[in-house]
Length: 377
Ligand code: IPM
Ligand code: MG
Image 1 (cartoon, rainbow, N blue to C red):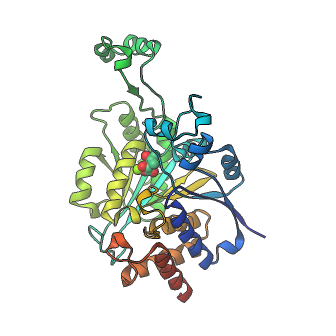
Image 2 (tube, helix red, strand yellow):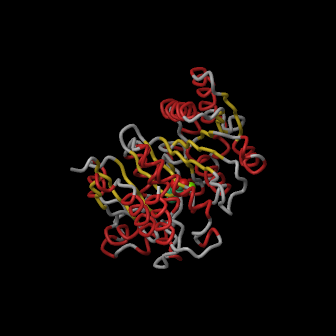
Image 3 (tube, rainbow, N blue to C red):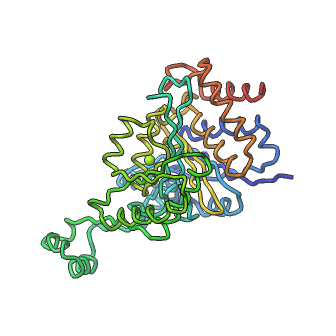
């Protein structure tokens, strides 16, 4: 009997290769014996052929799963999305949306957990003593999707009537205005802060740095920082640091080793987590967990890398480490530990190196190297 149902969403391009590699590792560590894998459709292919990159049948599969392992998807700007749509669906008002952003909101996966740790021996490390974790709010902020172009008259009128600084935009034609809102809720802010502080406490991080910009974005960033100051009082062993996003981008280059856990809103987290990932090997190593109270989706941070399709070339470590995060979330701590140790050892030995690490090990070659470490342990 299987203990878990895991929804597997390889997606587009090299998503398929890296998910295969991760499943191979999960087989080797003994996880797959107790699991039913439910493969689901997601991504650009389904946009082109069905006009929906996240079909309802996939949402149903996710609903019956404990959690999901996701590969990568291709996404393109509006005009290209329209051009590639099957003629049957053209001119029906369908709009391409990012399925991963939709999944985060649909399943209320409010935590985006992005560990960025330097594994010894990785030739791509900026320094070897970096151990950062980014907690990114995952459901609101600039990703709320509340935006307009052209701006409806009623919206513009409401802005002007309610905000003195909106007046100077009142002279523009509505089609010459675009508005994207940055919406924060107290609930959303508090739960990401709390989750980050709990995590810092559990895993021995001494500092929690709230990364915002309250000197300019007074209301949203301000709300986040004010709530952080209140919540930190519940964690006497943690120190709260407050850093503006621009300064954080600089400090991460200057002395990343001084930081532990960073917590921030959706867009800032998107940006700063790419920077943090680059310090420890870049996209081939960057993984992320989209985590809610009862559901989670684990993924490599990278995209579908169309130029490497069919070449068995890309680094699968990000996805293998995403699978490790999934094991942790399912409380399969021992297996999680085995996977991470095998990855760390393979990196340290330096015999298997994918192209990004300066070697010529293939995707499957790297997965095999990790699997044989697990078998030896
Ligand atoms: C990420 C990605 C996504 C995001 C894209 C693919 C929509 O950049 O997970 O960081 O912006 O959140
Ligand atoms: Mg990103």
